[in-house]
Image (cartoon, rainbow, N blue to C red; front, side, top):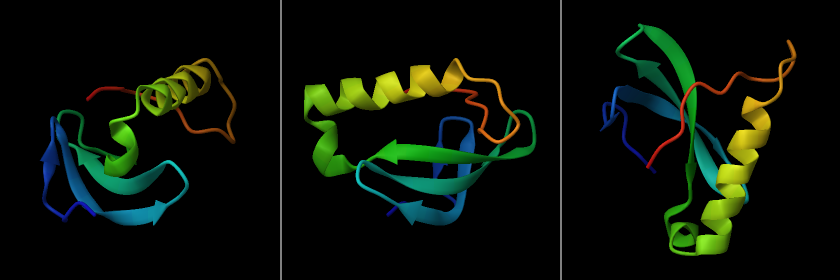
Length: 79
């Protein structure tokens, strides 16, 4: 778990939202634009496996290609 107040680049973690098979989701504040965002982080124990990192990135690219009011908008990807 990442503690509240931790900064990941321009994002400041507010708190945990949940966890699933591949990662953890956190509520955070984008300090550049002053908005609340969700951040999904690949679980540490999976990050060392190249095929799972690639799958996580494919998921991000797929989500970024979608535009629908019931699907979240992807703003950023990084390490």
